[in-house]
Image (cartoon, rainbow, N blue to C red; front, side, top):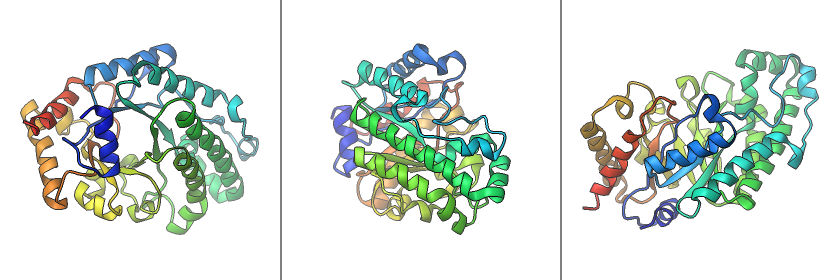
Length: 321
C-alpha cells in the first residue's frame, strides 16, 4: 500500500498491509521560525520516511496576546479572522509543507485547544483569574475558540491538510472539578472541534497528559473525532483497551516519548522487538490489526535522534515478510 492508502484505511478501520506509523519532534531556536522551520519539517520527513507528518506549532504563539497582566487584558480580546497574524503564519507554514511533500504523504496540522493556549499565561495566574472573574476567562476562551475554528477550517479546506491533530488539555484529575471542566473548558473545546469535524472526517484527537498527570478519559470519550491518541504510559490504558473505551475508533500510540525510555535510549533490537510486540498484542486482543496507528504518547524533544524512528518502520515492514 502507499502511505496515503495505508493511513486512510487505518483511519477507516479497514484492512492494512501493516499499521501506519508516525512520530513528531519539536523544533527549537531558529528552526522554529519562518522558511527554516518549513525546511526542517521537510528534512524531518525525508529522514524518517513516516506514513504521515504533522505541522508543529513551535515558534507560534496564539491567536490572541498571551502578554496578560490583568483581567482587562483578557477583556480586550477580539476576533480578527483572516487578518489574524497567527492564522496567517500558521496557514503559510502548513501550505508550504503541503506543497513540498503533499503528493507523497498526508499532512496534519497541530492545533491546540483554547484552554491549552490560554494556560500559557501561567497556570496559577489563570486559576486566580477563574476565581476572580470566571465570565471574563470564558469570554477569552470563546474568542480563542472562534479564531481556532477558522484556523481548522482553513488548514483543511484551503491549505491541503488532511485534518487537524487537535490537542486538548485541562482535564487533569487535579486541575478542575468535573463540574468546572464542563463549565469552563468543554464549551470552547466543543466549538473548535465542531469546526474541525465540519472541515474533515479524519481529525486525530490528542489527549495530553500535561505534567504527567492522568486525565478523566471518560469525559474525553465524548469528543467526536476519527482517531484518538493519549498517553498510554501515564493513563495506564493500552491501545487495545483504549480502542474499546473509545467506542471502536482508530487508536494511535504505543511508545513512551520521555527521555530515558525505550525509544529514546534502547537498542535497535529492543526497539524493534517492542514494535512487533505492540502489534501482536493489539492484534491478539482485538482480533486484527485494523484501527491501529503506531506512535507515541506525545512529541519528542529536539535532541531525539531521528534514525530511531526508522527502526520502528523497519520492524513494521518486517511483519510483511
